[in-house]
Length: 246
Ligand code: IYR
Image (cartoon, rainbow, N blue to C red; front, side, top):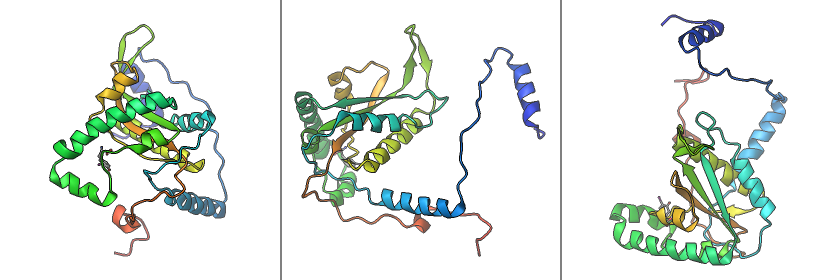
């Protein structure tokens, strides 16, 4: 295909598919910052994210609902395939419901750890000290479950396809974790396996599947975390830039 100008491509596309609705645009609000300020913000931002740790030890101290609302709103800023925003967050602070979630989770996880996990997986998790006991679900003041919408159910009850749901929901989860950390709380990415029971317990519609369960709260005063190192930049990146010497 020959090179097209943007205008030519738009014309050709409209000729081919005349029924497509027109996109509506508005000016982007964006402020360019001085490079020095960018360097400082980049370094501070990295340092703050690098202080994040996943802990399994939560304090029972309460956390106001408005903070959880802001974490969910932050996550909801994630980009998504065709802007379908294919995510639902279910936030639970009700102690009875948390206890039921914990019991059901521990039943499944007990089977997973003792019967379903191949030895290789068990060995991979051993350094992290995880097991089927999920005290964090009843200790943390909030349990937030993230569901993916495998397809959309429209207002007239018809169904519409969603796009790149795994990618979209993954990005959304990342923003949620960053927002929780940024506001001074801790969370844990818990993946009950299998998770079908969460759909039933939380009354979610049939187009939704649970993806992650996040206890959210303050870490316990004596919280411990596994001694871990993060991969270095050279281990996680490959560069083709002008400053490459080789
Ligand atoms: N889903 C189980 C096991 C588990 C799996 C992975 I991969 C982890 O990084 C941690 C745990 C659980 O949540 O306990």
